Image 1 (cartoon, rainbow, N blue to C red):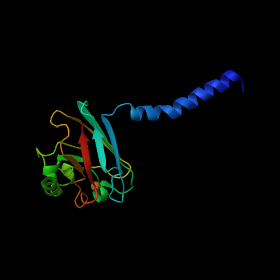
Image 2 (cartoon, rainbow, N blue to C red):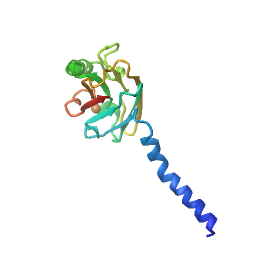
Image 3 (cartoon, protein in one colour):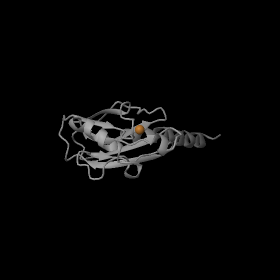
Image 4 (tube, rainbow, N blue to C red):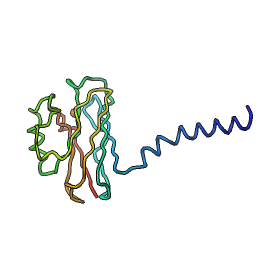
Amino acid sequence: MTLMRSLALALVLCAALALPRFAHAADPCQLEITANDQMQYDKQSLSVPASCTQVILTLHHAGKLPREAMGHNWVLVSGADYNAVANASMSAGLANEYVQPGDKRVIAHTKVVGGGQTTSVTFPTSGLKAGGDYRYLCTFPGHNALMHGTFKFG
Ligand SMILES: [Cu+2]
């Protein structure tokens, strides 16, 4: 192999290894969370700096079960509304992504995804207070006991 070809190959390898990491770390306003078939999120807390004017949250379902059986969503609420939203959402049905239509207490939410699926939601932070008490949960019936976390803004 010539020196030029070796250099070219090295560059391609470096780019392939480095790019996904840069893409990940570049924007602190972009969050990712993964859920699984064991009814768990991989993160118990998420945070974004107060400088973010909007947040993009991506939810991955790393499992295999369908959304009807082990669907997951990501719902953001204030701590004070957590229990009420958890209870109200259970009866909303899969067709409504397990969120009551027009529920003003829901700050942001994704759709319900099944195994192997990914979804994301983009929401403004204009309604959030820096340092406020925010929590996220999965509102699929029975899931929030295990699937919840704290959301820090600022
Ligand atoms: Cu769930």
